[in-house]
Every structure is written in structure tokens, then in C-alpha cells.
Length: 455
Ligand code: GDP
Ligand code: GDP
Image 1: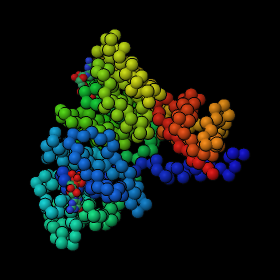
Image 2: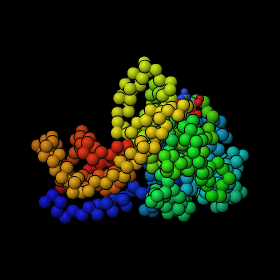
Image 3: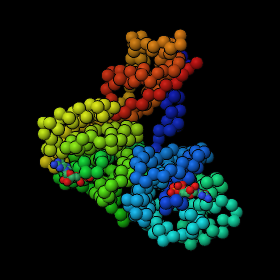
Image 4: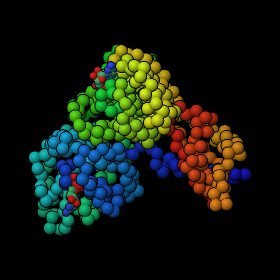
């Protein structure tokens, strides 16, 4: 009776349309202080211009979802770049490079009051070489009198300068219209995997955990096919590597091989790289260096993978360096700091000696299988019925919210929608997730549960 009038197909379509498909990516680049952050906030529709003083500050979130005229896309905020560490020119160049790799289109912001500087000209060269669509934003045109300043930016050779005041909103509508024209309907990296096509793997981890060593280990022994990007003469972005009898696409290997040698404060660049690789990957292999204590950066990368909804494998690397004592503490640290991903397959490897590297493939396959698991609606509801009968939600304010029924709205990762008669507390949701995992498995994958309250 609970399912009366309920059409799982309808729910599924609604949810997919509501936002789990791939979205085109827009990067906003430009020199410091030209108004990138202000513009990003404007695009996101945030009222307040969040312009913080944040030298060396690490932010784990660099992409945001935006919506203009009913079209959704992602905006990459490069505003918090480490100028102090990189130097202005290097930081702006790195931004542009990032945009080239990760974005489907770029908004290049220039301060119209200042005009085009040498740094701006250098970035233009990089952007031109990349061949990605560029929309030129002539910012700080706060009134009609600034339009002449904007017009001088035709000289950059990027086409029409769009006069904008990011601060006051002037001209941002026209700019966004141009952005929509520049963005492809669907991103280049479509998420759908052709049957039999190579699965996409991202090797992640903070600097020095052993990513390039592992890449060399697996690529060195096996056939490597370079998957170069059309129209560019840059390093290969992805590599096809044969492992365990199958071909895998290791994404963003350029970012691993072409090591950015930064000492301090490289976190932000690393975060960008991680976010970009996650965009493209289906499964993340997160490397942890067991010879050192787990760092906040390790758990942050794991969280990024989980939040991106990717399958996750954790590779504990440098196992050859482990002694008894360190091992004792390592296990404690894992229990404490990585409890959130206790479901992720674990491999203890040494990229250096090759120890257990062959176990990576089965672990990745397990995680991908969990990621693609689909539970039939009938089985799910039989399970939910028993769960609710055996462990009802606690009574709150004289009422007892009940799960009426549920459906799996999607896979990769598994997403469930539960319809309930009232608000379900976080604790109860976690309980449901735990029981779902016990019942149906889902190794190596985040599980997303949303609740809709039916009056
Ligand atoms: P970013 O370093 O490129 O991210 O630049 P911010 O967004 O932090 O802006 C730098 C400064 O320029 C801040 O003081 C902003 O308030 C100011 N600014 C940004 N956009 C405009 C604008 O359209 N007009 C004016 N007058 N100032 C702006
Ligand atoms: P990346 O920054 O994550 O790409 O790390 P690298 O692959 O450059 O490795 C950083 C350092 O750790 C290098 O000196 C490697 O030789 C060393 N290393 C990587 N993997 C292992 C390992 O399994 N055992 C040992 N002993 N050293 C390793």
C-alpha cells in the first residue's frame, strides 16, 4: 500500500535530470586583484563578495555548480592561488595551464582600468595555444565611462571584450550569455563509459606519497599507449596502461609526471590537480605514505574523492619502510582518521619494490563493481520493511517518522531516495546506510541517500 501511485522510473528520470550527469566546466583565470573572486561570487549568485585575505590558505573546494538561463555548469575558482609561493607570473601561468587541462571554456578576466599588462599578454599566449574557447571579461567597468577602457582590450586578440562590473553586476548577464555560447552542451569528458572501453583511474595523494613511482612501476613493465589531446602539443594528459590483462586509462598522468616543484604552500595546486583528476576518473586510488603519520591532507583527499562520488581504493605505499612500531601507530591512525572510508578496499604496497602492486587491479575492480551495483526496487523495499519493523525511528515530539518506501535512483555511485512520513535524523540515516551496506555490500563506493518527506 505504501507504494501506491509511486513510479520508480519517474523518480529516476527526475533525479538524473536534477543533476548527476556530467557538467561542462568553466575556469575563471586572470592576474591577482582583477576581480576573479568577485566575479565567481557574482556568477554563483552569492550576494556578498567574499574577498578574503588568504595567503597560503588551503581550500579543499575549488569547483562550484552554477546555473544561468537554466543551464548548469561548473565554475572553477582559481582565486586563492598561492601568489607568495609561486610569484605572480608563475601562479597566473599555472592557473591558465590548469584551465587548459580541466576546463571546457575559460573566462579570462582583465582589469580594464589598468589595461593589458605583460602578464596578461603571456596568459593570452598560453590560452591561445590551448585552443579552448575564451570569453574576455573587461572588469571594473563600473559605469558607461569605463567602456572606452574595455575597448582597448580588443588588442589582446581574444575577440570582443565584455565590459563588466563584477562588483555591481553591470554587464555580467551579457558575459554569461557569451559563456553559455562558448561552453559545450556536454563536457568533453563524457562520463558514460562505452562498454568494453578502458576504465578511468586517478592516482591521488599528497606530494611524495609515491604517485609517480607507482605510475612508473605499472607503466614501466607494461605497454603504455599515449593518449594525447587533439590540437595541442602538450604532454599527454592520460595514459592507457595494460594491467591484469585489461587496459586502464590513468587520467591526468601529465600532472603526476610533470612534477610541479614547489616547496611550501603547494597544497592549493595539489587540490586543483586532485579535483581535476577526480572530474575525469571513475575510480580514485588514494596513496598514503605509511612511513609518515597520516596528515590532514591525506584525509582531505579521501574526502574529496568521496564527495565527488567516485569509487575509492586506498593504497598504503612504502610498506617496505614499515617497522613494528610504526605499523602499530599506523593501524590506530587509520581507525581514527579513515573510519569514514572503512568500506574502501585496501592494498599494502611498495611502489619501490613492487610488493603487492598486482593486488591493485582486483581492488579497483571490486570498487568499480560496488560503484555500479543496482538493487532491485522489490528487494530494497523488502529490506526497508524489515529494517523499519525491527528498528523504528525514535519518537520525536509525539511523532514517529517512518520510511514508507525507497528506490535506487542511480548508480556510480549508488544513490537511494527514501520517501518518509517525516524528517529522519542524521543518526538514523547513518544507521540505514550501515544496514544497507551490510545487506548489499557496496565495497569501495560512497552511497548517497536522500530523503523526501511525504505529507
Ligand atoms: P582576484 O584576486 O582576481 O580574485 O580579485 P578580487 O575578486 O579579490 O578583487 C580584487 C579587488 O578588486 C577587490 O577589492 C574587489 O572589491 C575589487 N573589484 C572586483 N571587481 C570589481 C569591479 O567590478 N569594480 C571595482 N571598482 N572593483 C572591483
Ligand atoms: P609523488 O610526489 O607522489 O609522485 O611521489 P614520488 O613517486 O616522486 O615519490 C617520492 C619519494 O618517495 C621518492 O624519493 C621515491 O623514490 C620514494 N618512494 C616512492 N614509493 C616508495 C616506496 O614504496 N618505498 C620507498 N622506500 N620509497 C618510495
